[in-house]
Length: 461
Picture: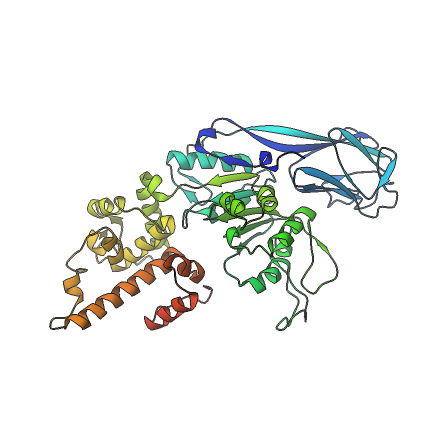
């Protein structure tokens, strides 16, 4: 068996402008009513039969409605008969399952089909745009990413998007879906870190009514809800090792079974996944299955952090300001002063685009005029830069006459609250990620939220 890593393409900046080699397959009808018909595919599962819902539709009355399918399992292709009336044959042998080899023929009824594995070469060139879908930025690295998305979106390749928190991984997934052949189908977003381990299986595959305590009705999981479309699995690295084999089995077979259910349900979805962790390193240390990694990462794309595309800062700021004014016409702020922009260019943006948006929103709320100045920027941002202003200095934060102990407690409390608010905003109110970065338990995070009376939207975990 070939090395599965040969079928994973990590896209680096140096590859742009070169040929991206992608493994595809072709089915050619060499005998029967549809002789000459071809199907080029990259999907992990391809279905054949007379029904219009199949990928290869055949006008042969000796073929069943859903006659058979071809499944890609790791780096091989398995032909599976679906209890067809007249059977599926490789040579003269009727088979229920059989692995296909290059240029082999198999028969369905009166039709003979040839299986041809191919290597398709795709030219990847940068797109010189300031935006692509919902993605914004004209930096060279973003233009290269636009070019790659433009080439892989129409395929059925599974994609793993890597990058720091807040770099726009979900927007890349939306762009892939928007410019794919599945754009008319649903895009279902699933955060693997948002559910406790005991509920993950139910959320992925669904459950039947009464299958466990609290299952008061039948629930359709994300695979069913995404039928005909795309599933975006965010924070894939958080999926438990105990669930990974079931997840892989669903991807390879195209079938799922609800928790507590007896029948299997066929699903047709494309998978795009994202993580801010290095999955290749997780494979090495055993915390992520190698076969699942190679099944998902047919293309591996890494987004640059904001500090590596700082020339996009002003473009992004203006976009966020315009968006805020569209939502609230009473917003007075129209721009950032040069001094404020200088401060923001000197910051390293650990929360990336998400943190930038939060800073723009907070600065706009504090701004009294039509121009945002350094004094309007959040105090925690200025503190991390080592800056103080009259309105945010330590002296101004402590009431006159306060004793040392009380002053110290007050300053610690102020820091603790600002630190927590900054983390919550940077991680979009995701408690699991906040706890992980802060190095504390989730329950401690909740206690601090209650202590400082911080409002959390109901959707946040």
